[in-house]
Length: 83
Image (cartoon, rainbow, N blue to C red; front, side):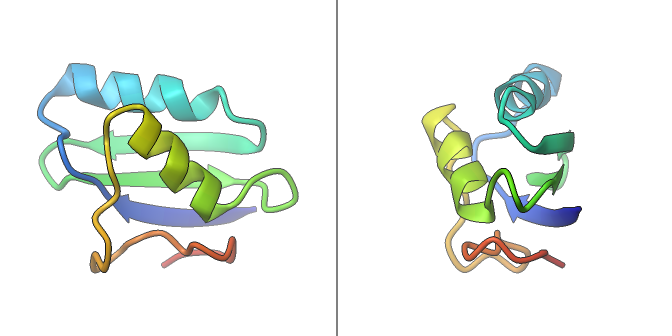
């Protein structure tokens, strides 16, 4: 099991947090999601044999929550465990 924390734009409220959780938990391999509108961070636990950090970042962007490139805690786009 791996975990990554993504810095994400456009998280404004609890509804945004819920939308992110819904979008990501539908992905194969995602075991847990915690979105925080106060810090604009999304923490994700996932099975590396079923998905990657890059796929999670793409899903976030498709849902309207783009990952900040070069963020302090951006995704590990090669699928390894994040910070």
